Amino acid sequence: MKLAMIGFGQAGGKIVDRFLDYDDRTNSGIVRAAIAVNSAKADLIGLDNIPEENRVLIGQARVKGHGVGADNELGAEIAEEDIDEVQNAIDQIPTHEVDAFLIVAGMGGGTGSGGSPVLAKHLKRIYTIPVYGLGVLPGTDEGGIYTLNAARSFQTFVREVDNLLVFDNDSWRQTGESVEGGYDQINEEIVRRFGILFGAGEVGDGQEVAESVVDSSEIINTLSGGGVSTVGYASEEVELESGGGLLSRFTGEGGGSDDDLDAANTTNRITSLVRKAALGRLTLPCEIEGTERALLVLSGPSEYLNRKGIERGRKWLEEETGSMEVRGGDFPRQEPEVAAAILLSGVTNVPRIKRLQQVAIEAQDNIDDIQRESEENLEELVEDDEDELEPLF
Ligand code: GDP
Picture 1 (cartoon, rainbow, N blue to C red):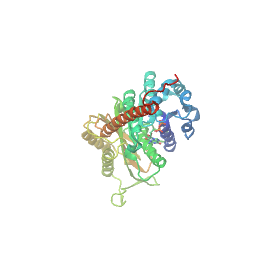
Picture 2: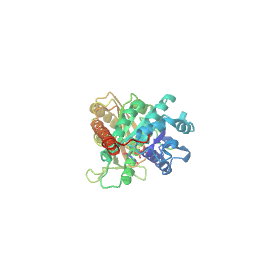
Picture 3: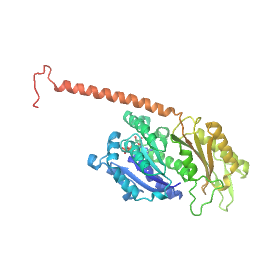
């Protein structure tokens, strides 16, 4: 699937930058065009792969290139005011060769949190191709204002996009790491998961054609109907033999004994990967029962993929989710691993979002109280007790 990616704000820009790097490394061809939009000049300069002419600085008249300081209402306002500048950059890309837009942003900050829903609304008015969002939730330790920003942005963003894919930083936080180092790993996780998913069906030169191909329309159909999506992923190392033959090795299960590659093994490996992917850590933790639609993508050397495994995986997913719309297919790649990526679209039982909203409401109440108190305190300080003094004007 070919995407026009727009990274909004710092996190969004960095993640799209990383997608370009992933595309380059894996030759997956998913990023047809990449644009970064920000109100902070320094963040745009810090990007490595997004072409300079595709970096759009907005809000110069208001914030002079210094960012909006986690004020997402201001982020939304300047996006609205400078939407033409963003559109000018989009006009330069071949949108007729693109299957969908993907707007990527951290939802806890200001520029991306406020600006992405504005851009989504604008794009949906102009283009007929789908507009998807990839929204990153802040860690719970980031504080009330980030949570409040994310909760408000989430509500708005879901409404404006054709589907909101969510990644929760909180589930992926590593302890004892620098924030930057942590983000590096998290961003790699994001591009791997979404890269496999969107990469399915993009067959490049010299790549094999899948037996039962997942193509763009299947991804689009899984995402259509809107709502919120999460992605599960699991992989297992396999060995590619230099002579062209293959040996399999079960890593972590029985100490890596070599095994004859046979159909039963292949099927079992696939079904166990599907279970691990769906029941393991999702990009947004949630209950998978009640998921409206799902897509299963199995990637790896074609000798390690078979129709029976995918069929069984699909059936199992149908039972677990209760969905009648579970699609599946393979994505052959000459990599020494077999991986299952599962897109769960239209999830509704998400306790994490309910908690986020609860904390956001508390933060909002606290902010209101503090503001009221500080107005009263200032009044008390400035006014003399008996009201004997008069201001000049
Ligand atoms: P903006 O520039 O005003 O849009 O705000 P940022 O993008 O800097 O930050 C918004 C939120 O994104 C933060 O609260 C973090 O949760 C998250 N964030 C910032 N940088 C990264 C990153 O590189 N990767 C990920 N996954 N999240 C990030």
